[in-house]
Each structure stands twice: as C-alpha cells, then as structure tokens.
Image (cartoon, rainbow, N blue to C red; front, side):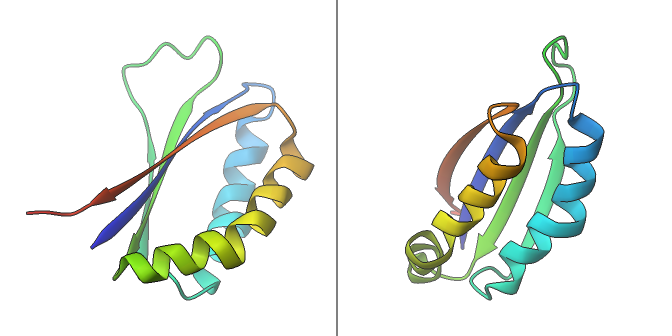
Length: 101
C-alpha cells in the first residue's frame, strides 16, 4: 500500500472556506481519478495555530504505478486549481510513504 501524504498549513483568514472546498471539491476530484482506493483527512492537534490550522490528507493507492500515474497525469491540474483558488494563503508539503506493517 502506497500512502500519498499532504500536510497543509492554512491561513486563518481562509481556513473555514478552504476546509469546505477541500471536503466538497478537491478530495472528491482526486478520488474521481481512480488512482486511489481511499483517503483520510486529519487536523493536527496540539500545534501552535497562530498562523492557522494544519491539516493532513492521506490518499491510499494499491500500487506505486497508480501513484505515478496520478502524479504525471492528474497532479499538475489539481495543484493548479489549488494555487488558482488559494494562492499563497497555504503551504503544502508532500511525502510518499509505503505501508510496511
């Protein structure tokens, strides 16, 4: 199992609107690509939220090939939509993990 992990620090001025957009539009768009089997959406606790809340979205893919296909075929458009809508009001950090146990 491959886990595509995205950690996002969101400006407090857009936090509520971004959260709703993430749930209603962005995550469904990513899942509609068919490259991931499931996802989890988290809010990081016990963090300094002076600069806004931190969220984590994890997408679970059955294979590295599915992730690679997503990255090359769909990710550029998804990232553009994110940037076009929210600009520099959030920071995203992406990592790739493999479930080993």
